[in-house]
Length: 290
Ligand SMILES: [Zn+2]
Image 1: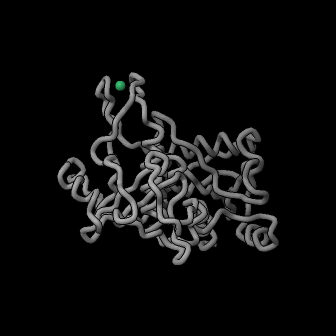
Image 2: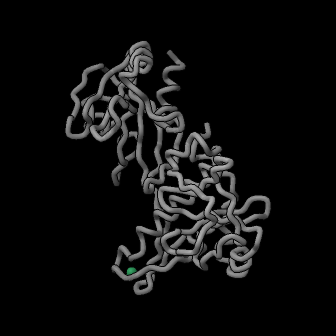
Image 3: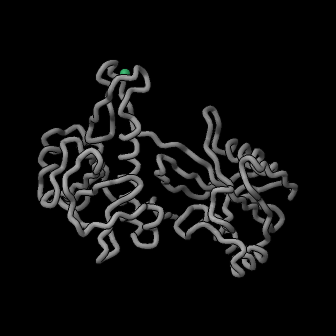
């Protein structure tokens, strides 16, 4: 299964990141494709509703642009528009990655997710977590090095579990108070240090809904660079329909049969996350089995 944001096709060429001559050549090559990023937004061409085509002919790349990869001998770089206030083609429209889901192809969405994730990481790691001094970009953006203690910092990804809990023909869906009214989704939470993914699934479901989960089965993953998560999707089997919702974490959680869920979504009292999300993938997969 390839989910939206998870279908990148660029060769990430880790072996070329340290090649200063190759990088210098590609930073100025007129063939090079440029992806300016204004997290969580990327550049859309309103005439095609696809990713805007921008090259080094349109904008001058900074020396510390981030190498995304290579495809058909064309190098792709991203950069943070706040770091480089050079003018961009005026035809560009900015679109938030989560909202552009209906517009972009899986490949373009995935490329933007990669770029947004990298720019987010650089923005949040300007200073060394060990000694507090400034860090500098290295290896075409895949490392930052502290100027004082020389600690090497690497781009981070924060694992989060998202799980559709099922029991006796029901699925457990919950909602947070801040979500749009009527939206229900699979439960989710961050993995903590010293915890397996399965343990994180069981802990989050117990904490948020008071439901005891037995079997946990991995289904798929989706990069979620808002700012740096990787969503790991599971199906989880509960032993009973007993519920005890923690209302500090969730506004509500309910068991739905497939019929109840279809009814509630068609009369508009409940709506599900957008089709591009892993949450929806998990719910749709369960519905298809009923
Ligand atoms: Zn340091």
